[in-house]
Image 1 (cartoon, protein in one colour):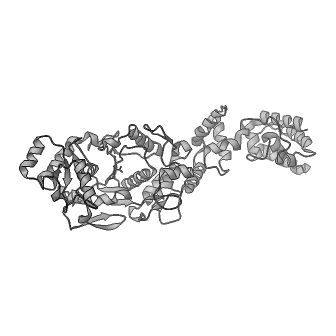
Image 2 (cartoon, rainbow, N blue to C red):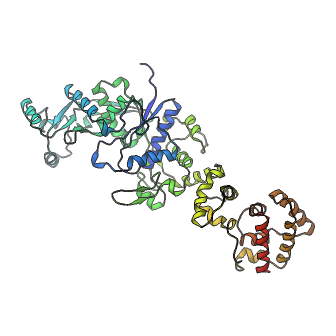
Image 3 (cartoon, rainbow, N blue to C red):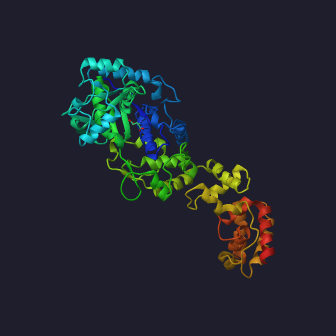
Length: 505
Ligand code: GLU
């Protein structure tokens, strides 16, 4: 068999917001495609019209745009294996359903929902399979003429897959190895419904993976139980030779306790489970998103990459390119990965420190505007640069730490511990002297001030820095004094100092 070009896909159903676990699935597919020089497809699996939610597809696309994960082909990206939206591929699926029926691999079933319901009541643990299909109404149990009559009379039917019992089915999984399931535990899954003339997930998924030449199926662990059926379907179609390799990713688990991560855990502990804020069109409920909460997309991707995989070293911070280089699907864990959202905060902090201040500035500018402040972007960036090392998780946390850059202290709180301790006997006189010194400086840069003030302080034995901070900030916070005064400029620095002398005396 010739080596096929690696092609993987992310195939969400547009049933609501994209869960953060889905983002990790897409990320792993992307890393795998990139590192193999392959292609990454975006397919929409919307054959279950009852679960369709308007806006979900656009939401998913917007999420990946924000995260910076590009697709090579698919819905909205084009490509020559389209259409990529399953609801636009009805005619294709019909042809393949017919192929299975003609080959005796599938059959018509006419049982009504009521009939199925009463069978379930009658037979304990009822399953539609080789042991029960004989007592149901289908093209295997009914006389041929009756089947003809039903079909030509327009009776509603489904097409079921005919699973042969008693066979060990092997799923070759890149993470889990050889997963073996006996076909006797599988039921005759519905592949197609005449009522809406649409295939079910299983059929559409297999047909599309085949036609789109998908080589590797990387998806969440919740799909592992479907995998044996998928293997049997590939074989029934005669496509065993080009069957994709599977990788079922570990579940994302609750940060605390047992069980899988749910939206309720996020609500309870205060972290988003969706990439973007989601407005549920049915309930009107608004759910928080990583973007709106102030996470950087790079931080989210880095955090997610390490949920279920690690490079085998202590390295935690890695760019997308490094992830592409280091990622190894076979080294993913089989056991679920705890969703340690506190670690997510740490990643965001680290990425804020790494990121260029000018790129961070717009986010802080937005908050400044909300507080009625307009400043040139270079000055906003300068403040971010001076203050971001103060252990902030989010840019929005900067505001209470650095309002004084933009707003001069109006009054001075004598009860403030820092003011009381540092504005003592000689403070006013010291500040007057310092102000005179600064006024005479030509070079008001950090270095220029530092040289002059340090010399003066040494010669006179003065310690002006804390009272100076009281004058410029009003309390004991902020960056290095020279950085602050250089930012404020000579005029504003002197104005604040004189005002403090005046008020505090
Ligand atoms: N439509 C499925 C989903 O919503 C795709 C599962 C698969 O990748 O096979 O996740």
